[in-house]
Length: 230
Ligand code: CA
Image 1 (cartoon, rainbow, N blue to C red):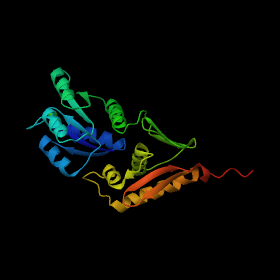
Image 2: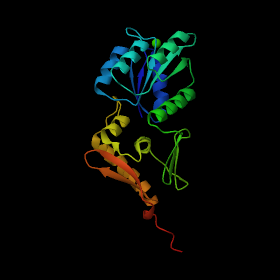
Image 3: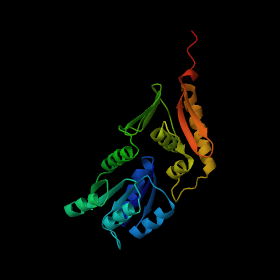
C-alpha cells in the first residue's frame, strides 16, 4: 500500500517511514500540510497519517480540506496525549482513527491494517482466494497449505490483487502502490513482478489474467491442478 506521512518532526517521521517500509508499504513523507496538498494534486495514496501539530496549516484543517476535496482515503491523525478536543474534532472533520503520541510501531501497524481493510471492504487480516491465503498480520502467504516465499514487491502486488479480487486491479494503482518518490519503477517493471507471481501461483490453479488497457485479475481455475497420477 502507498502511504503519505504528514509530520514536521523529523525523528518521528523517519522512524515511522522506516517501520512502515519494513512492513512492506511504500511511504512518502512531507513536513507540512501545504506540501501534502501539493502531493495529493498529482499522486494518489491508499492512506494518510497526519500529525495535528504542523507549522502553518494544522493537521485538523488539512483533514477538513482533504474531505472537502472529496478524497476518501483513510486518514489517521496523530495527537498529543492530553488533547482530547483535537481527537474529537479530528474525527468529526473526517479522520478515521487517531494515535496518541508517543506510540509503539506494532500498534500503528495494526491500526493501519484495520483501516486499509475497511477501506478495501475486507473483513479480516487473512485474505483468501482459492487455495491462496495471505495473512497480513503475520506477513505469511500459503498456497495449498505450503508457505510461499515472496519478495517485498511481489507481496505488494499480490496484496493489491487480493484486496481487489474478484474485480481486476488497475495497473496505475498497482504502480502507485509500488513507487514512492524516492524509488524508480517503470510501468514495465510491474510485468516482471506479475510474471514471477504467475509462475508461483499457476501450478496451484490461480491464474493472473491480464486485462488489456486496464490491469490484472486473479482467477481461480481449480481444473488447472493436476491430480496425482498414482
Ligand atoms: Ca508536529
